[in-house]
Length: 197
Image 1 (cartoon, rainbow, N blue to C red):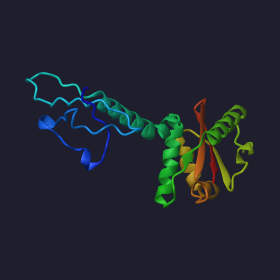
Image 2 (image 1 turned 30 degrees about the vertical axis):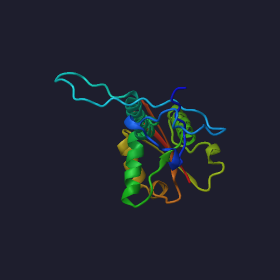
Image 3 (image 1 turned 45 degrees about the vertical axis):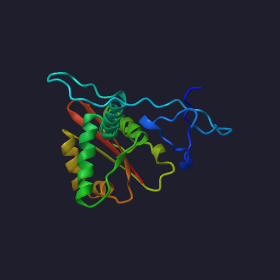
């Protein structure tokens, strides 16, 4: 009969012989319901390698490092990747202004953004400013909309901050989410910002 170690935590089972192995005769009988286990293979010790030799990290470390790197990219790049470049600049300017007034930053939402983009396209096609559909306001406790036109995004943002009503929308404490729509046609920038609480 060969050596069959089994899983047990009782201290009376620990009778190591020379070399750390138990003989088959010294092993107590296997209790009913316990499964025999294969002996663990000893791990090889890590030895220093010759100069210039490459060492390969174990697969689990490589997978863990890749998972952490991927998670970092997804966490930090997701908000920036969801906005186009003009909308990113407008969102950054708006959140900077809110930060200066000790207000929470606005989080971009896809539904608000889609409505803002549609509104900006409609205004650019008609060539005039107007407030659009309020279908996106359903189930919102507070909402607002800024529309504007100018030569650059910065110029439109400055005009918003100089106007009392537009500034009040941008700095309203009730708002937590926003959607930005920017359309450039024939040298003019048409902007819509939807706010929601």
